[in-house]
Length: 72
Image (cartoon, rainbow, N blue to C red):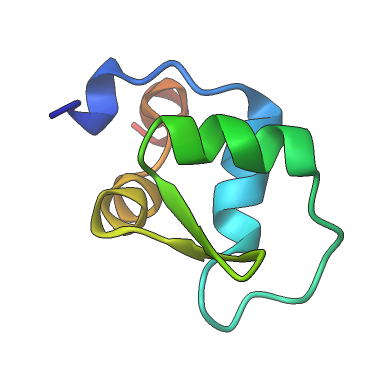
């Protein structure tokens, strides 16, 4: 299993993960980025409706490791 600190997600992938959070404002979803997140096991598609997996939720909650230095 990948640990979220090992993931090297692009800015587009992070934006997509944040957009899929419950309660997040509706936004256009990029199918190419969604497919990448599905391959990483962070998102599932059911009837073309994306949702975060448990791992995806953990990654979103912990945030982007590159931003940790800015917050410190």
